[in-house]
Length: 479
Ligand code: ADP
Ligand code: MG
Image 1 (tube, helix red, strand yellow):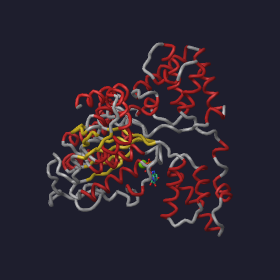
Image 2 (cartoon, rainbow, N blue to C red; image 1 turned 60 degrees about the vertical axis):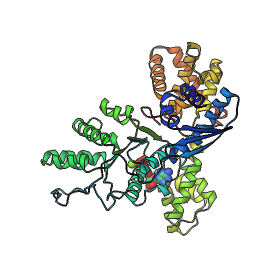
Image 3 (tube, protein in one colour; image 1 turned 30 degrees about the vertical axis):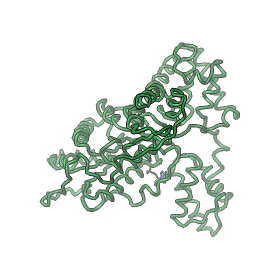
Image 4 (tube, rainbow, N blue to C red; image 1 turned 90 degrees about the horizontal axis):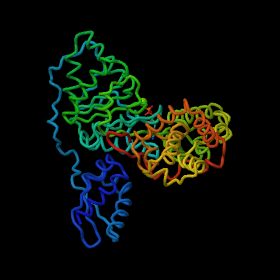
């Protein structure tokens, strides 16, 4: 049975990708078989839940296909001991004689107190999970739960106001609360650079180095894109990264885009940032926006009815920061004018629902449908592995249009095209872009399809449904 189990998992590898296989399937082991019941083990609760929610179904299907037998499973967590000693050396508090730094920037290394920059508001319990951030939030939670082990480095990227900083702080809070001895360094990349420059200038390089390399158990760096193109800072960060990574210290980095899209970032740094788990955050869907508004209203004691919350969430769709800002604006004005917060009031303050002014977003499904109809190919072909031109050309065009017209990331597009790697999508987009420059016919086709997708209401009805979950690929790729 063990053989069939590993064969089934390996059989899924081409479909799910080698990285997904390595990350999520391989750690799940078959321990025993009792009739049709499989006893599995997972290295921790997070892996167990992730496996159950995302892969168990396909694995059971695969087993059924191979053995003509239906199995059920029981998964046991083998090593989820909280705060178990890891291979890290026992962290030591900074020596009592640590020199006081003359420039006194906020020294982010602490033993007993949380890093001062961490905002008390940004914690896991008040981070609302939704389709757009599920993976990043789960990975952040896992990194906070088991720092320095599976998700290292963790790279979280996404547009402005989508919760990257919130998650980074939440990781810091959680690690501090559960492992108070761990020295957590939280810093924006901009501050990291400024400190580095000051250290070089004032001849305090040893201190700088010691702070980031020797006295750091957890490094949280926000907005790393800031150091792209700053050669010496990149170089220094590269060395900090290597030292901490080799010592199995947890590193979490955020950015506004994926590593390979950061112009001016050194290749070797991009490759390091891709080593662990790369998770993207996309704008929240309507349900998540409503949940975030409810939480914020409750926290700030703002009285707002459910239908008005929904109305507000429909109008403001760009990002969470704006969403929260709009709620504050509306409630402040309502209080000043002594009027209740109604839908009309919200519309007056914020303008008409965006849905009336701008077309609803295009979904990956609608792109696939329109492209398939145009080229008379089947959706299953688009998602399948066949490479002959009659199929690969429409597939590349569809991927290109998905990237242009939806907010989906490269990895998500890959996933929704039958589990292809994100590099395949990137290449497809590049190819179509370059062919279009010379090939007028292709350009016209792409334009027609684009018009069809952005102009025709009927193709957009199934917006963002049926994705079946988060964006999944794995280390080395982007989640
Ligand atoms: P980013 O760093 O991605 O620009 P932030 O982390 O600063 O965004 O988030 C902007 C604001 O939105 C913060 O107040 C944060 O608490 C809030 N926020 C973002 N995502 C969520 C979420 N999923 N649940 C609750 N609050 C959120
Ligand atoms: Mg931020």
